[in-house]
Length: 288
Image 1: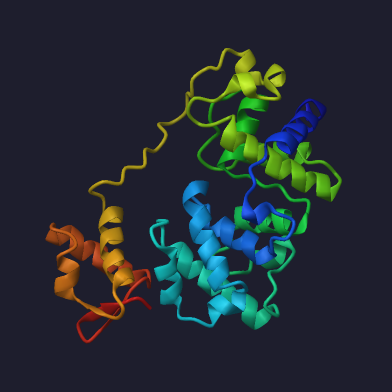
Image 2: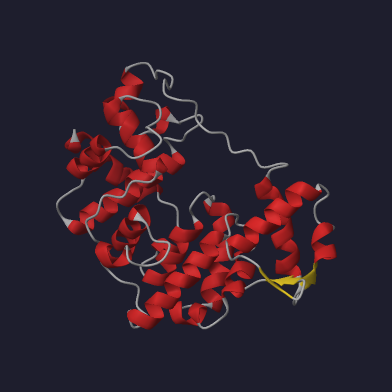
């Protein structure tokens, strides 16, 4: 199976890869790390301008760590899930203080950084330093699930079988393994998409178990639908926007004006305080 998948997908990537700043030869490990934090649950098109602005303002971990965490939240803008900004700031601080302002190059050390889990550590080690690591994001899991296991979508959480499958497909040569990881990820992003996959353009369509089986529909538990309008998440975003756009602290009345429903607004405000995304002092609120 490895020979029927790896070669064609690597060649496809050579011809079809998007030109993304964190993939360029001159990209720093810090650029790769920032991109990995920003790309979690956020499309590339939304990340590109924020990533560029971030790297211009903070070209190194120490440049970010030397500023208050609230500036990271402010610069995060409307990417969503702003706790990622706090975690990236905390990771940058650790890199400045304990790693000579250099992003670690191995999986084990990367895992010790705040906000860096299994996937992010593997991705940084692979894409920044060319290490041989199993990188399993949603796109990779979907491609392997369809081509090898013959299922439309993988299980919600990574299984032992998935990890063993991915490890078995990983080329032994580290640079080739790193190229394979980004290639299969790109195939999932551009061709083997969750909705309306472009099977006719897939370089491994003749080897795909799911296509050969007639593309059977997903039979697992209902897949979660990401609603946004009217949710606590939207309310949190509105409140945070008031603080992000203000030059200093704001009053409770200013926050009240951002969302009509008082119970939900109070709940969202309490959660923002608990998450450390905002701070309160003398009945006024500000970014940390």
